[in-house]
Amino acid sequence: MTNLTLKQLRYFEALVRHGHFGRAADSCAISQPAMSVQIRELEEELGTELFERGARQVRLTSFGEEFALRVRDILRSVDELGDLARTSQDRLAGRLRIGVIPTVAPYLLPTIIGSLTRSHDGLVIHVRETLTRKLIEELAEGRLDTAIVALPVSEPSLTEVALFTENFVLVRPGEDAGKPVPNSKALREMRLLLLEEGHCFRDQALSFCNMHSVRPRELLDGSSLSTLVQMVSAGIGVTLIPEMAVAVETRSASVSIARFKNPQPARTIGMVWRKTSPLGKQLKQISEVVRQSAETLRAQHDPV
Image (cartoon, rainbow, N blue to C red; front, top):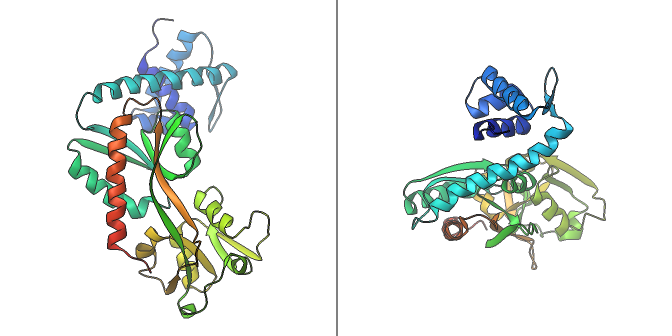
């Protein structure tokens, strides 16, 4: 088994990730027939099939599942060899694959990218926006260098660096401006709009309202903070959003913003990366740029 190539292993990993020859080929910028040939040659070299091929998708065989675990480790190690060479430079240059959760990305990313571009010549930023669970998975597999998420993530394999803490504010219909601000108990009796399952911000809001053990009177889900604010503007209910989202999400909505009494609901945003990453020192420097970007954004937009 001396003819395995890194190219074949990367194509294999792409097919595992996408579960479809066409999508995997697109992600690797090759044709579907070329992808099929490479996978077939890999299977012939191994002497066994890696995938069960269906009409619309492919599934790993039992051997394929075991093989996939080893391939991820190999590819991550190869990528880290390249990262090791980059550590000899004073500043991080080249590709930086950064993941961001959806309740941070639209508000903080423009400032972050601008700051990183100015402070790190030659840095090419690749952004991945998705839920925390997926970001942690892709970090572990070596497909991301770092991620900006709500802390803690409590993964022993990851380094966590807290960046800043921000409060949540209440978004109500415009005509409710001036009314007393409900406490967490009162919120449980209102029509509360929250992000759909899977968003950590949803869990944080539910925790503030103590709704894990108490069933709310009416709870409606939305796919984004923008959707939730527009629903509030239409008089459908109330919602909570982080401070950084206020300036963007309320500029075209007829809503009012109010702070809760202390202790206010809040979250801590931080950066995480693999403890084994050779880029740890450089990523710590990047985290300081992100922290300063957040402070700049906060100074520009005082929501309430």
